[in-house]
Image 1 (cartoon, rainbow over the protein chains, first blue to last red):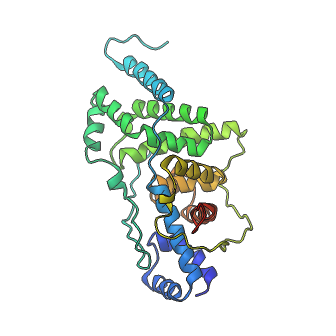
Image 2: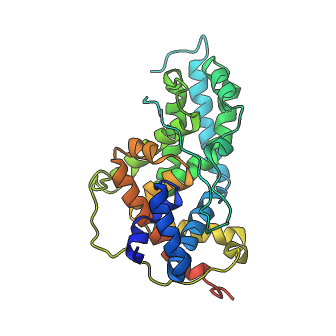
Image 3: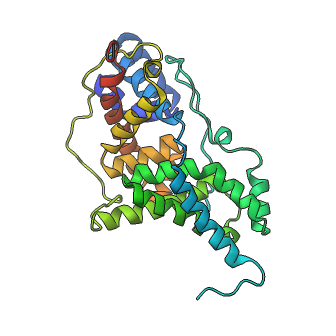
Length: 85
Length: 222
């Protein structure tokens, strides 16, 4: 396999979505090619860094507005609530 | 609302790369979610509030990453939760509640993005950038590159590099790799074919790798 073919199959390789024969060919290439090994490793690290990153807490004003909107909506649903104009 | 019948297949790390495995949706979603959803459907407001509290940060990050605009992100998040509440009765439990919520939030965020860009954002066209995908700057990052940064600094870097991607790439990466939807779920949520999702995902991953390289290559911030 050539380096260009490795890159073309990279997403499926990382997602383990390749058939075993193609996967084995890629791994044989990776054993010999340091550049491709680095690209595979750093691309996987890229995914992991984003995947494992914690979302920041909501800004207090954003949370307050969200909860006000929800309270307003929940109130409308309660028995005896007057219908929305 | 459309159900998501597809479940993501388990992944394991490539043999040549022993770094940490991705967290799977079953690890992202807590076990009591179906109980809370059932209670919310039966009219338990506090159960729905618990679900909101559990997912508000993730949904806000999602709408922010799609819209790249704080005001639009806040509106889209709010509308997503309100719509989820209104349509809770339509949720049949064929998918995870979180996946269903993500799909609602994506729709709201895309509407905001299109409105702000005068409806020129199209996700359903095949993109041929003519750009060579062969990576440049092939450099080793060394062990634990993220440990070289403080948490807030790292968040800033991640927000910056993902914000620099064009929307068709950014949104596919967001759904597939951050929200952990399957390729099929991502295709369905965005109205794309599976090959189009795969093609954009590959480009997005390579572009992000390229951009992160300047921060994470050995000796980058020493």
